[in-house]
Image (cartoon, rainbow, N blue to C red; front, side, top):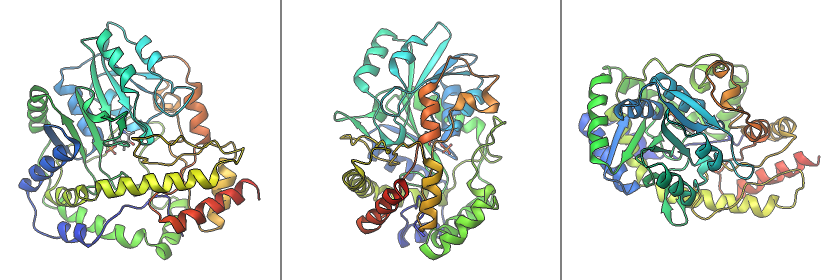
Length: 396
Ligand SMILES: *Cc1c(COP(=O)(O)O)cnc(C)c1O
């Protein structure tokens, strides 16, 4: 079976994980990450969401409104709430996946503390328009959510540098991984210093067993994503037996994982350090496969293909369709697993009914019901097979 996602891991990562590791490895990983992103400072966290939560704390934001997309990963809203602030949700633009920046600007009030700009699915946020907003609102803190995009570029300008700070997710579903983990980058020495201080106060050192648990988890990932075994993994997942590992949110709860304040381990940092070397190759590969899907699937009327944009990093390749569930089922019957990320609009989730500030989110709702993800980790041959399956599923 072809899985919907698969981390690119080789012997190097496995060897790195099983070598003795410590806090110095985390510092080394931070240095390498900062260099790859072209930024002065990088600060590691156990999750991206922990990084965002502590960043908002370090910036002194409390009881403020934080503007963020309605259509994004729910953990972003959780981090805002759990930092003691309120999310103000903004719908996506009619075209593309990112937040409508006109609506975001209209949502700025005296209570606004920060704006989170997300380059969803690797599509760079429009930095020209964001510059305009920053010019007109000089006190506004801008945080780039680069969990999907990493160093995506808007007309040659990397998104991660266009704000006060940026944060990244590094779990195994992200572009590169440190098993679990997250990172915050900034060019501002003052922000970096304050964030390091807050991290020192709020995180506790990893327990003696965390590195071992991460080693075992990573080692299990290798066979789990291999073709023959993945069929079984998929069946277990459909039965709900893997929820502990794959379910990342509860519709009715605003919470964080139990270990969200336990610092990144040296083991994870070593794996992440190895992955940094793969970054450019992996992005190049994803661009190539996205272009291939675009060529083969163009012209199917009931599929709205995602745009091909220079500078996009394609964390996901996301056609939209009204027949999503039927296509997913058909593809599975042909041995291809497709995804449906992101299948909710955050303000519509039960947990956010009471919390949500803001109006209507029709574009987010439309995407939530219609996005399909095609695998980008595959080579050209498997990509052609996937595209064939999708084409048949649309017109069986
Ligand atoms: C994955 C992700 C994050 C951070 O996730 P963590 O699991 O906390 O590392 C943030 N924003 C988006 C859009 C994401 O997909």
